[in-house]
Image 1 (tube, rainbow, N blue to C red):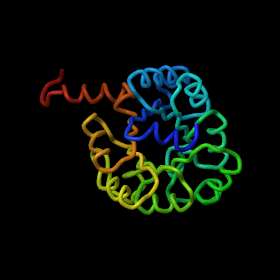
Image 2 (cartoon, rainbow, N blue to C red; image 1 turned 30 degrees about the vertical axis):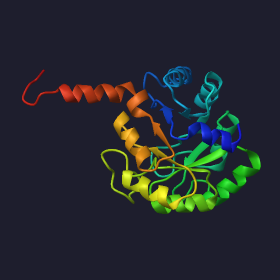
Image 3 (spheres, rainbow, N blue to C red; image 1 turned 60 degrees about the horizontal axis):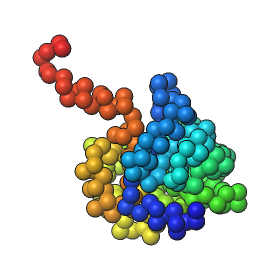
Length: 231
């Protein structure tokens, strides 16, 4: 699938992130592939998957584009943090590789621009830069990123963490950038997803609110907890 066709498939559509955290019952690539199939059956235009084997199995299980990444660590630059991680994701079958698009130091010593330039020598997959601010996004576009994600808004210290999606950031990026901006992060309802499109998002990526039953269950549990009672 070429760049134009892929972007046409994503325009104003839903991307579903299918990820489970280490130690959780669903933390199995086969399970994530089945979750991805269920999401596609519901209308997902693409799937975001984490981990080499997850990307491989999801890519084999669905016929929509896969945005792949590898998380290595828990803080700092940990979303596809190095060139080798990015190439591994592409070799596993991802049509789009998501990587940290911030201006923070990268573990392998390369700049984002160097990472993207070297990646182009080894893969024709598109690159999605997960950013936390306008400065990140402007730098990532200059470095050669094909898409920008608001994934890290509120997590890098440059912007406050909003209760829902960072609509102000989306509006600013949509006005400034000439590459697609993917809304991602704290989108917990269909209404919020629609708000991100109205704010200028090219497409919307939702994960927890669709594919993380532990968190969804906790929302209901907390809503039913009545202060002053012991259940």
